[in-house]
Structures are given as C-alpha cells and as structure tokens.
Image 1 (cartoon, rainbow, N blue to C red):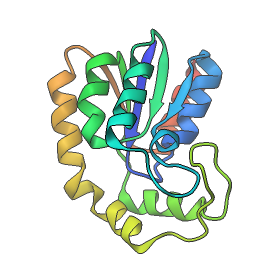
Image 2: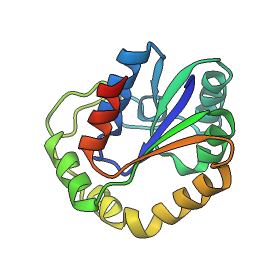
Image 3: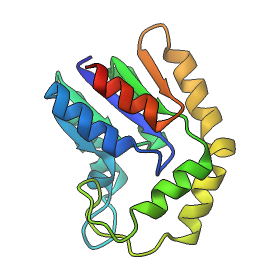
Image 4: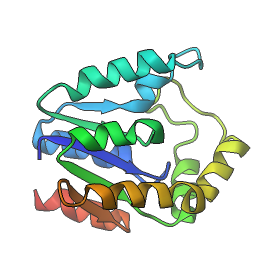
Length: 162
C-alpha cells in the first residue's frame, strides 16, 4: 500500500480517514479539493488541475483524497489501493452538515452553510455517481486492492488494525 486513493460520497468521512491513514503510514496526503479550489472560491483551470495531479501520481508514494470523477480513471491507473466509502446518503448528508462552520485542512475556506445544490448532489450520489464508480472499480479489481467501507466504524476498525 504505497499509492492510495480514497473515494466516496462527500460527507462520508473520506478526509478524516485519509488523515488518519497518512498519520499511521507516513504516506503523503493530497486533497483534490485543495488543488481544485482556490481560497477566493474560484477554481483552477482543468489543464492545470490535471498537471498538478499528474505530478503527484508520478511519485512513488501518496494518498489522494477526493472523487473528481473525470480524473478517477487516471488515478485508478496509477494506484495500488482504493478505499471506497459506500455509505448511505443520509449518513453523508449528516456528515456534510456536521462540518459546516468548521475550519478544515481539506478545503481552502470555511463553509457557513450547506448549499442546496451540494445537498442535492449528495442525495443524488447513489443514483448518479455510484454506478460509474462501481463500473470503474470492477474494471480494475484484478490489479488494484479495493477496500469498501459501509460504515464509519468499518473505517475506524481498519485504521485500528494497522
């Protein structure tokens, strides 16, 4: 386990898990949200985003936290381990609500409300994003170690076992 991606619905606990995994393994952690989003709430250009991501994946060791579906095939091509948070949307919505108003190291700003569009994106995640994720994972399951968490307790137990 040297090149790791952590994926799943926003609010599932990916970033918390990625931080804990990095602390246990010493692998450098990269948050896609910190690359894509700029402090002024604009975003990086797509080409620059991919260029920065390619620099990271060229390294021999890393953890990359985040979905960004358009780059998932690229990350899957270069990783050896995937941690997939497959939690119910109500758990993810609660997780997203819980972090409102809190400073986070995985975002360049503090969110003071949960945007209605983002809330809907989380609610729609099982229907719109999960089929794509599952297809990509099934295409890579012979080559990549895929660990699926259905609860946060599963993720906590994994960290405790390291």
